Length: 206
Picture 1 (cartoon, rainbow, N blue to C red):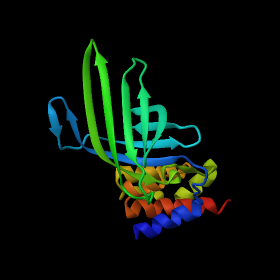
Picture 2: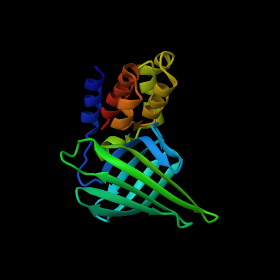
Picture 3: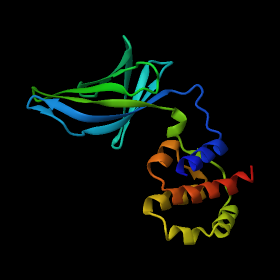
């Protein structure tokens, strides 16, 4: 049911991934330092590769960083140099098919007061169509927004939804719709139904 609603939303919004950067979602499940190896989750981030300029951006919950991309044999490496001269590298395999889960290693070499603090994180990355990570927006007037709110009885629906669902409903009423990635990860079936109904009403004006 959820996949059917998801496909309907994507179809109506007309998502297109042509001429877009290459995007991976990366998750690290273990790491190592001078003290030893530790089999535990460490972090997640989104890796966005600008293929035309050989640059990349890593987006984390705490912010983003950029650097240069280096092509290797059946893989890519990404080098970041901080303002203080510290170096971080990330290397990922690029084995076919593209949607195959790829292995990744993320290494940090930090110098502080003449001391070296180093760590290495191990995990996997999966290819994400860039259109799946982008929100979509439809212009809507305040009057029309209120009409949709009343017609769909959104106030009553909000009483039964989680706080996460409610946030997406309010965003939808403002004309901002979640990315495919967000819909899959965050929205319940009930939340997706009301968001899709709001979208359908807004699309009638286009």
